[in-house]
Length: 142
Image (spheres, one colour):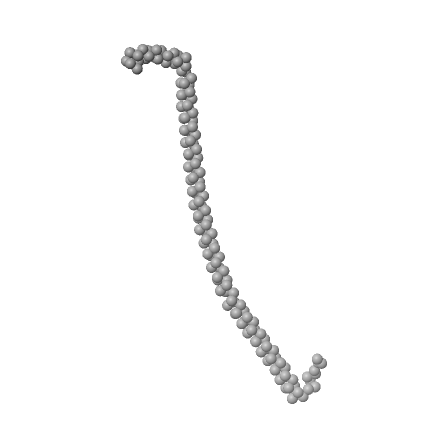
């Protein structure tokens, strides 16, 4: 665009140029206002769509956290029960060990007593008893 020399223009031409410049500025201002309004409307629509989605997502996250808390509490209860069970098993194993030790001592004592028996004397005593009972049995008729 060529540079216009305003000092050489008539008053009428200057007024016409000013009017055209004002109309051009008014159109630009209107275009800027419409663009701003459209941009504001786009943001309003985007927020109207995104805010419920964000609220729903936060609600889902809260529910998931509550479920995790319940699961952690259940896991702690299970761990406590498992520890109690293991303590019971330890006590039971200790008791079984005591029973085994006691029974081993009893079996060893019994075996010592059995080993003290003189089998030959026992057989002789049985034979002597049989020799006494046979004549008595014959005497009483059996």
